[in-house]
Length: 165
Image (cartoon, rainbow, N blue to C red; front, side):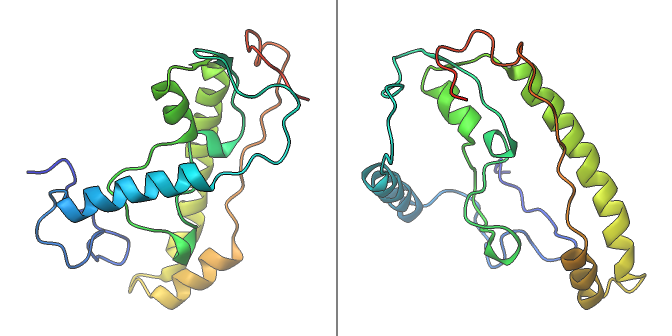
């Protein structure tokens, strides 16, 4: 079985509806290459205060939800099914950069996972035993997920090559 086994969503639908073969097609490979090239060519640097370009193997500190929970297309109805997503953290590590504040990111991950579980426990019961999607949507839309706030101490970016405040 493929590493991309079909998952079941809350509504019971397959995570990849309409698919019978979970192997990566030549068409998908071609689209991945095109998307990567378009992203690289389309990025614009708005301001450089002398930090960029980063030197090879630079030590970096990452903060915020986007470091490991990188939004790949949108949220809610704007979300997209993808076989895999490279987060900002993974991409920088893959490129040879050293992330110096993994402990802070790990604390954030733990608190985020706990907050999301508490949020689900408060929202999903609103759908009732019949799992009414309209009731679930209303509860989901009216109950924002509280994101953790973790102070950044002086030790968190310690060792980073450049610190921008």
